[in-house]
Amino acid sequence: MSASTPDRLRMGVMGCADIAWRRTLPAMRDDPSVEVVAIASRDMRRAKQFTDRFGGAPIEGYGSLLDRPDVDAVYIPLPALLHAEWIERSIEAGVHILVEKPMTSGYAETGRLLALARSRGLVLLENYMFLHHSQHATVRKLVADGAIGELRGFSSAFTFPPKPEGDIRYLRDVGGGAFVDFGGYPVRAALHFLGGDLQVVGAAFRHDHKRDVVMSGDVLLSTPQGVSAQLTFGMEHSYRNSYRLAGSTGRILLDRVFTPPEAHRPVLRIERQDHREELILPADHQFANVIGAFVRSVLHGGDVRPQQEGSLQQAALIERIQQVALHFEI
Image (cartoon, rainbow, N blue to C red):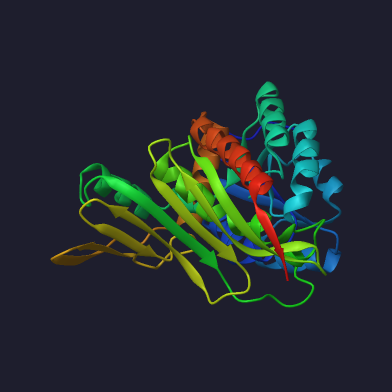
């Protein structure tokens, strides 16, 4: 692949997923440092629908995208269990990679691909976009400043109602079920606030025996000091998207923590025994922020090693949770 210019990154998109249509590609289109040069799909009509809106050449077949000399980096929003194959093929083609979560389905594979990318001088970044929203830095500062005393616990939920039949999350060998696809959000949030040395106390998964996928579940983690994280995920619930940090003198509560629209102004609640306040935080565009971070890392050598280390910690913790989880057939 030919080199990008110092101020512009030529991106190819591998897959026409809903998240790309609604959130990531609009952020790429609006970033002056990004040029979308091609969008690939298994269906040429689908690729053309995307390029009509976002520009670039429509491509039939993911491999054909990697054959283009004008692609410096790829964004991969394919179903979860296809990520590893196309990350490796992209590395072999010599392009940088922004991939939707999860990077792979396991710790060893994640570590291997990160090491392979580094050996080729390529950036490989997993798109846990919520980490790039400023609201979480505000929460961490409040906790560090003692707003709720000493931290005693963390809880988080990411749940939504059932999807239509045929949704990729219901396909064991493609989407991999609820825990593989989006159960990692509350897990990553726990790592973000409690640190990387989390132990798995237990987990209970509701397993659909007909589809052979996990539909929902609860996870209990703990730091070595006994600060616990209670996490809920599922696609058979009402919609929830929140976390809470409990301290010795109060609580911090925040809603819409994983998927806030760019115009949304988060409402952060602090509750103590005789006090309650609400802080209206600035709106932020987490998709634009992650695109910006990826572009800076490719064009200007921005340091993505902390987020890559987080990806490794996440993959290891996900594996441990899966190993100890009790499955209840439904």
